[in-house]
Image 1 (cartoon, rainbow over the protein chains, first blue to last red):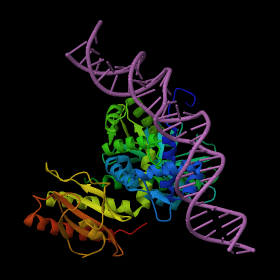
Image 2: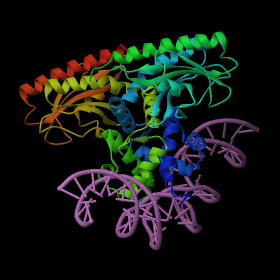
Image 3: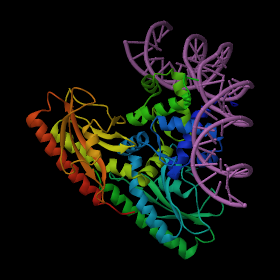
Image 4: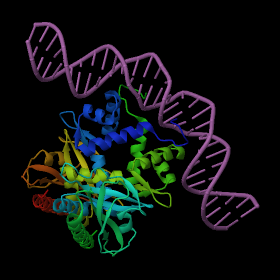
Length: 224
Length: 224
DNA sequence: CCACTCATTTCACTAGATGAAACTGGTTGC
DNA sequence: GCAACCAGTTTCATCTAGTGAAATGAGTGG
């Protein structure tokens, strides 16, 4: 196979990438999807058809692909089951608000094994902005998110210059769940030369306030 | 390949089935997943690892697989984008209530091309019950759902013996969206010998009431 | 210590994925 | 009306990459 003792199914991976591309974009034509995934159209078509056949995608009249019933079923199932999904849904509006008030990109992160994993974001609209960290993991011991998720100084914002990338500054605060346990962290990330002094202080205050608002939100929804 | 001019990627399909199995179940071990999908463990493991590598699944400490960050990201994205997903989420509690009052399984169905597609369900808890129609499509012209989705007799319940399977009776009512347009149908499905006369009448009333409640719900959420 | 279960790795085989190229059908421009 | 173009679809010879039985390893408990 590829090279080492690691075996992964290439064609499955391609199909998953296609799925990701289509769902992220909302709707894509064959050509667009093929270009994004860097596949010949014939191969892309086969995989898209497979996804369609299994109901993960549907094909609209115009020929473009979008999310299908099977995927929606699973999406809803995972949302109802997974507390993490509930967390993301609850956090999204807060992220949007946080980004609006600070002008910088904001993120939601959780503990995954011994790393912090960025789960969701609201991106800044400014030209120079922090972008694309969703899905990325960073170590705990050298970062502000890590410190927040490790439970140091709860109820306080950490404001630092990132150790991960040199030009990035962060303001981070911990979020607690219904039972008071630590569940996530909110961060505001931006370029270091912009996020200093006064701006950083404001970001710190905003992120703290938002974190407690989200914590309250999480406490106030316990039906099912 | 298989037989006709239809080409689908088998390995991709297997990976998707595995994904479906795991997400539906919430969490599965390798052995369980392999048995459900009817695959040798070695093959199942390879696909599960592929899914894990791409973040669609995560592996817990005990070794069991469950939904991963990538899938959640896409799930949330599709929910925020797709009106159909909003519909499912809004409908679920109503389905639960409907099943509780009638004692029979209830379903949400929408128009997909020229068929009715069952999207979501709340299953009856009785031993003899209607089960497993989620994801299934039925023709429009011979069914009660079809009639409801075709817009005949809005604001009225259709109570019939199913043309699809002999022992099934149905009570169906149409659901309208915020703009008044027809968007879905709610059905209560049960065994014909149980769903007769009085019981059927009660089911008809319940489904009608629930349909209008859901319609009102849909009208009352228009932010973003 | 052996028997048992479940996860992982190995490996020889070939079924099945691949993608260039040919084809179809629709749209534009001259 | 014809030619050039473009997006989607189908075909097919090539050979990679997925397959699964079996061996191995890691845990459990009797």
